[in-house]
Structures are given as C-alpha cells and as structure tokens.
Length: 430
Ligand code: AMP
Image (tube, rainbow, N blue to C red; front, top):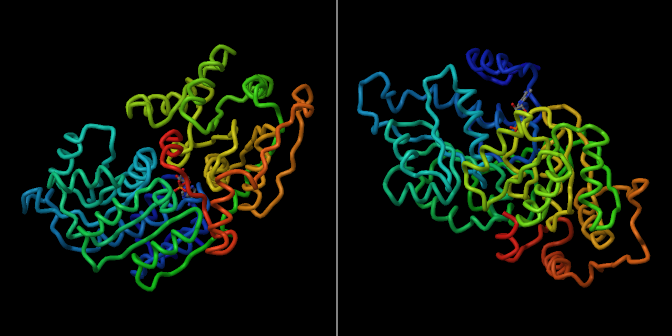
C-alpha cells in the first residue's frame, strides 16, 4: 500500500517520496484516512513509528483544500488577517522543534506556513514570526499561553488541535495550562490525541476533549520498539561510569545516548567520560536553549561521541541512525524506559539499549517489566560482576512510589496506572 491509496493528493505523495518514505508506517496507514475523514482520534503508537507524519500530512492536505482564509502571500489581505488554523501542542522544546521541522518538510510544496513557539528562547522573535501570518503553530503549552496573553496569537480560528505525547504533557503537570488554552479554542474543531502510553489520566483527558473518537492502537499498549535489542547488566553503582566508558571504547560505538535520572548526574557523568577520553556533552532543562541545540547538533554531526540526557530530553530527540542507548540509571517512571529506548530503532532500523542496573535498582527493573509485560533477563559483564556481599535490597514494598502506585492500582486497577511524582523530583529530572 502506498501513500496515495490513503487519500493523500499527489503533491504530498511526491513530497514524502522525495524524503525517502515509500511505504506508510502502520500508524500512518490507520491515522491518515481517519483524519482526512474528519474523525477525532485517540492514537497510541510507539516512539519513532512515524506518528508526526501520521497527523501532519492529513492536516496539511485539509488546510490546503480549505480556501479560507485567503493566503496573504497573494497580497490580497494584510498578513495579520491570516488566522492560525492548526495547533500542535508538545510537552518539550525538543519535540516542538522536531515536529516543526517535519511540518516544514512536509509542507514544502504547499503554500502553508508553520510557526514554532517554546519557552527558553526569545519571545520577540516568535511574535515577529507570527506577525507575518501563519497557518500552523507547534508550541509548548506555557509559551503558547504567553503569546495568547500578549495578544500575539488568536486561537479562535483553530480547526485542528493535536496533542503530541499527551501522556508526557500530563506527567509534566501541564493540565492547568492545557485547560487555559482550551478556553481560547473554538468548541467545533477536530482534535487528535497521540500518546505513547495510555493510563487513567489520559482516558480522563480524552473524555473531555474528544468527540466520538476513533481509537487507533497499532502496537500493543506500552510495548517497546520491537527492533531494539534490550540488555540489562547488573553492576555496582560505583562502577557504572567505568563500564559505560569501557563499552563505548571497546566496542567502538560512535554515537551513544545515555540517560541519567538527574541533571547533576548528567553533568557529572559527561565530565568524567571526557576524562576517559570520550567526548561527551550533557543536555537537560538547566541548560540554555542555545546550549541544548548546540549539544544536540554536535552529537548529530558526530563531533561528540556521547550525549548524556535526562528524561525530558528523551522525547523530542530524533537522531537518524542512532544505534545505542544506555540507561545509566533506570527511570523512576517505568514508562520513561519505553521513551528512552525508543530513541533508537527508529523507522525500522535496529538498535541496542543497555540498562546498567545496580543491585538497589532491581525493583525499578521489575516495574519496567510489569509495564512491558515481559522479562528482561539480567546478565553480568565479565570483569564488572557486582559485589553481592554488599548487595542492598530496596524492597518495592517500602518505596514511596510503590506505595502510591499500589494505592492507585487499588483505585483504578492494575497496569493502567502511571506513577505520580513529587514536583521536586520532576524539577530535578528536567
Ligand atoms: P516520528 O515517529 O514521527 O518521530 O518519526 C520517526 C522517524 O521516521 C523520522 O525520522 C521520520 O522522518 C521517519 N519516517 C516517518 N514516516 C516514515 C515512512 N513512512 N517511511 C520512512 N521513514 C519515515
């Protein structure tokens, strides 16, 4: 099946073919016709499965077919009269940049313009880009509201609203911002909700947002990308840095994304790995947008060999051909594991995800296994066997997270519950 059989016009088919897409991915096969038929959507798909094109292509087509409002480039009207008609909300700046880049590429042969708005960057430049008149905006919730309050954008003509990675938006505590944004949107619109994982909070949100939605699930819920080989090495916490440098160096890996739980650990590890002779940078929420962009670009270009990131950075990163992901620490939120390892094995290519698990993290692995509904066998790397005489067992029963989780499980039922987090731990993770 090719893209034209999904109802896309030849011009868009040519555009995606030029980008090297010959076959639609499963999420594209399901979502594109449904969106073209004006359905609201609740869609679950693994990361890296082509979900951006799944919503961007039909939105571009629908906007292009709609004759109103007239294109200001035709000089018939002043630029400001062109209303923004599609809004894509993303949880992080990196994802916003990525989605915007995709829209620009897909809309290349159309007359549509797409703006980008996220915090941590000059609002003036973003206001200026809006003044020229745009059709689509990709934004993070906080910055979008800033623009609304400054009257730099009018959302009253929005026809298409997309929540990309809605689960992460809720995880990051964006619900108040989302509700405030909704007040500025027309009630009649098409709403598309994309989420890699589903939980009770997502279903609650979907009920208030969507009208008779089509439910699309191309993969089993909460499964990791199938092309990614997953390995778990049990190793003492104080030898993790050593084993990381050893793996990268001895196997000659050239582009490795490493995840830590905190910003402090990310900075520390990057510094230590540089001492080991592996050029490494860190990327997290305390870095300026410029520094994050630079670090990512240098990593993509192969100027740095390893990039250490906190979980927030894990969502928006799309690095072609990224083969290796190392979980330096297992995440406190098991669903984050899926997003982390989803940075590799994208668009059908293979990947390897290695988790370094210290004995006190065994309960975190159990939580990941519960979400994946699969066992991840543990192994020892010769020379890095853990010293089990000093094994510390942190019982799931005793952890606060586990207590909260069990309480929620009792309320909502098992396996539909995502972890809740304290705001301080969230802050530290970004
Ligand atoms: P996404 O899940 O939207 O982040 O997309 C992941 C990657 O897959 C991006 O690099 C896209 O350019 C690429 N991609 C999207 N759709 C296709 C397709 N039909 N064929 C090949 N690559 C694709």
